[in-house]
Amino acid sequence: MDELISKIIDIENKACAVVEQAEKEQKNINEIIKSEIEQNKSKIEKQAADKCDYIKNIEEGDAKKHLEETREKTDAAKGRLEEIFSQKHSEWVESITAEIINL
Image (tube, rainbow, N blue to C red):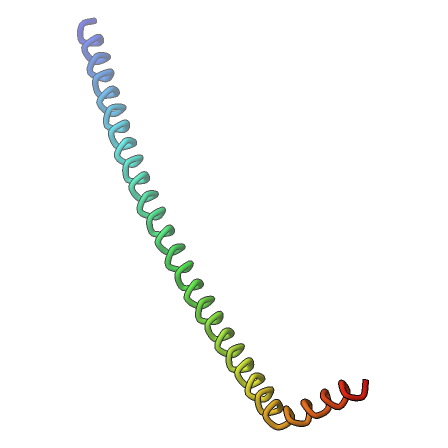
């Protein structure tokens, strides 16, 4: 009978050791998973920040290009207006003066 009790106690001790080892392994796996999640989170956040910077640079470049094109068109239109004015200002002055005198 003592031998049977001794075997049962030995089996119980081995079972406790197996459960304890399994719990340790589960804890280690949880820590590894937690670490990998943090690494992936950091990686994704960096990728998102990099993509935002890339898009921002593209948008700024497009805005600068559009602004420069607008400036060029404005300068060209201003030049044409100044040219027309220099050619016709005497004519316009005479026409306006004649209109005023004829009133």
